[in-house]
Length: 123
Image 1 (tube, helix red, strand yellow):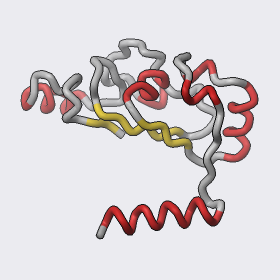
Image 2 (cartoon, one colour):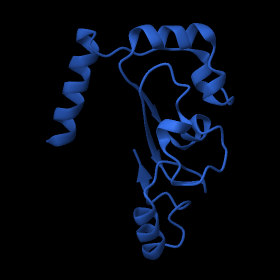
Image 3 (cartoon, helix red, strand yellow):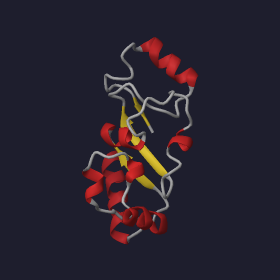
């Protein structure tokens, strides 16, 4: 199946060292991501081609839990990151960025609670 094959590929990347995980207590703390400790910032800037951040709470930390206009480019909001960053998020709060106006209009027309009900997501 698709998910088992994907999991096996991801495990192979971890086992080979192609992908690494960076543990730090900061990942489980509430401050905005731009308050990342210098040591972690330096580690990511030297060794990471891409950081993957998942979940609503972490996405909100990337945005500083601020109500950016939804069409504000993500690259502008996350320009402080020491490496490229990919956020995976199910929408559960009325904030976001990097969303095309036509797409947000379509989502709002299809579902009035699209920003908060967890049925929609962003990458």
